[in-house]
Amino acid sequence: MSFFCLPIVCGTRQWDKPYDPDPRLNSIYCPNCHNNSVGPVKRREFITLWFIPLFPIYWGKQLRCPICQWRQDFKNREQLQKVVNEQGNIHKGAGPM
Ligand SMILES: [Zn+2]
Image (tube, rainbow, N blue to C red; front, side, top):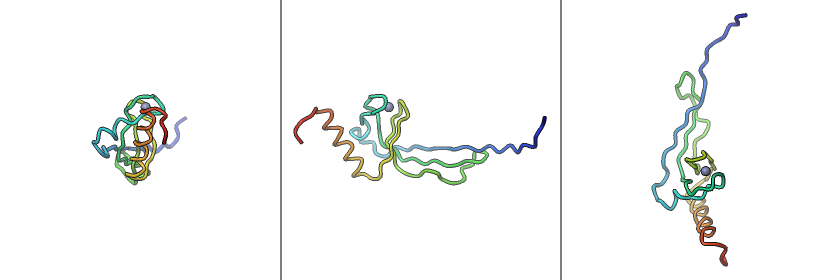
């Protein structure tokens, strides 16, 4: 009952670095767990073989909630700022645009 089996230890490894320490950008409302804990991160994710990073499968920027691990991609600073502005409107209540 023994099959030839190559022990390939394959996995992924990820790094998140803070994108901007600005507290306004790091207290965004999380639509998943409803905390104001979402912040932007620079994210790198690699396929690893025997724990050695081989090639990236993700390289970009994300909004991340450290509480529930909710994530969403964003492209650039303008898009991030737009999210923050929209959030500001939500917190102020529904006012005239
Ligand atoms: Zn969350």
